Length: 496
Image (cartoon, rainbow, N blue to C red):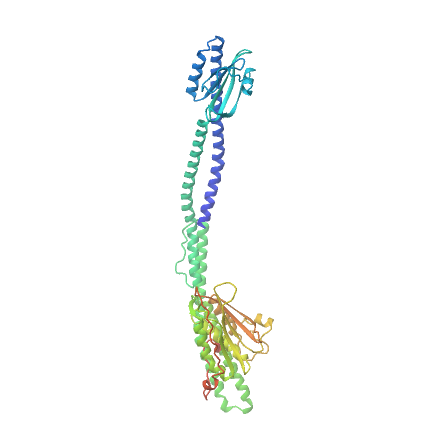
């Protein structure tokens, strides 16, 4: 903004200088030329009068001396002819005595008792000259004609010097205006820069350096005051919401746990016919508990402003696949890891683990036995610097309309089981966006659902050697112990 203000000030000043200096330069040049030509014509007329008198008195020997003296004083070139147009004298001795010059236009005009002037090339003076050809006459009798030529170098040099002075003055004015404009622009934009820093701090979570409200123009002062009030109010609301999320997580756990225990204590005293109703009530309490945990998790993620960090996606994928292999093997589902090594990506701490856990939990819930879930990394061919993580299952999949609504909170498909809460995919989306990425759902090539997470790469150079696929079903018999297997506890425990 400072640069734009400075350029606007300088452009306006330059326009004003051009409007003032260019016309002044042209007027000055025209005035100097007019003064020069007027003096030259007057000098030529005076010389012609003197020479006419000399010729009339037949004092021809005095003419060359007088002409040479005049030419030396003025630095010009003088030619004098008699009434017949024959050369009497040449101050530069370039033309022989008696040469007939009556055919030249300006000489012929002067012999008809009329003056003429203009510019021409003069070989004797070596450049452009202004000439004035005047008759030496008494009344209507022309006794001689005088052509006086004067070099234009003096007047052109003077005009050029004037243009240089104007240019120097203009540059000086521009330099002074630039200094003043820079100081003025920095004074104007200082509150804007402070607001920019404060906005960045507020976006990161905490306003540590509020902008000053007593600097800059009145409009920016009022804007800074309004921003400080808004930021203070917003921080207060965020702190209140964060405090609510923290307190509610503790206050809601106890009554839900107590309610579940009381329902379970009814079991020995209930009629066997009411056992199904009791189990459904306990299941609904568990589902309510997971839903509360999911809502609180979303609230904490929305309130937190965590900076993404470079995280090794290959290591996280391998770790989560190994953790989920035993649980998937219990359901006779294979977890396969495919794709090249992609290195590090930007993600908030713990987000990759929770994203993969949620997506694997969703995929495992809908995967039939003897099918597989694929965890695949890829380097897309689109914009550089992106990494894709695919979690594809072979379940029933979703229609296009269902995929569009899948990220809505509490939404579940009509044929979904009753244990889900409809918060798993919104949590995945929130984590992906907090990491600077995005998530989308598509149809898997062999049927089922393909969840694609796109993240920004944290490595400038990547080498993608192929990664060996791992199968959970190949080692299922060795991995599954006789007793029940508990799956990992993470955000996925309350998402669905």
